Structures are given as C-alpha cells and as structure tokens.
Image (cartoon, rainbow, N blue to C red; front, side, top):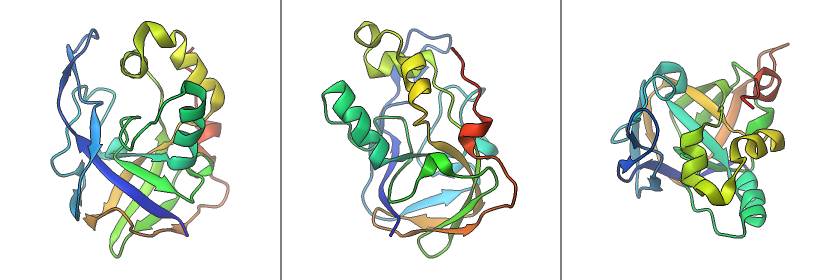
Length: 183
C-alpha cells in the first residue's frame, strides 16, 4: 500500500547566497491533520515564487525509497523534509508518475502530477555546499527527482494516509521523460 509518511512545512527561513537572499527549503514534519488548499499546505511558504509554489507547484513529493538511496550515498540520515518536500511518500514510484496522473491522499485530497523537480544551486547549498560539489549534476543523473503536484481537491492530510492512483492518462509522458537536465 502506498502511503504518506510525513507532511512537511517550512521550519524557518534561512539566509542563502542566492539572488533572493533567503530560502524556505528547511521543511520539517508536522503532527496531525494539515489543511491543503489550491496553493499547497497551509503554514508553508516558498521564498522564490518564480521557481517554486503556485498552482502547478503547490506541493512537492519525494519518496522514502529515493531518500534511502541518497542516505546511503551521502552517509547520513535524511529525515522527511530534507529534500524540501512537502510530502514524503512510501510505496509509490513517484518518478514513474505520468504528467496528468492523479492521486487521492487520505479520504478527500486529490492531486495531479504536473512536472519533475529541477534541482538548483539553493538545493546544492542546502545539501552540503562545497562538500557536495556537482550536486545538481549528480542529483539529475540519478533521476530520483520527485514530482510537483497541483491540488485538484483540497482537504486535510496526515502522516499515514493512503495514497491511491485514481487516474493515469493514456499516452502521457512520465515526469522523467519531461525532465530537462539543467547541467
């Protein structure tokens, strides 16, 4: 059974060397049910609205299976939220998701896969800066990107909720087929 392991929101804005000057990548799990609306999880923020957030990037999902791979590669625990994700999943191959695929999370929330995440330098600095030179290229090459999601039907979600694929559009590309490597 596919399920939601954690729901994550920004813990704090952190100074960042990028053009915005701050980042909201520091996401952490929250307890209990959390309200989800058209622009994502209530109480979450994005510092760079040009590249994050909005209706087509309301939520970002990352799989525990992919986090486990990176934990082995990086030699450290990567708690839910480490990748800047709002939803840490288990038991669903998020990287094989089709653009336009819809998932029901819990009893009511329905989301639609829109596009893959494109890693950026903010993400590289978050992962480890100089200790992880080439992170964007490395992350891209592994193709463990995770999808952005549009919220179709809002409601409440919580850790432990089941994730059910309710629609897979015929002939649609996967998020990986849509990915354009930034390197």
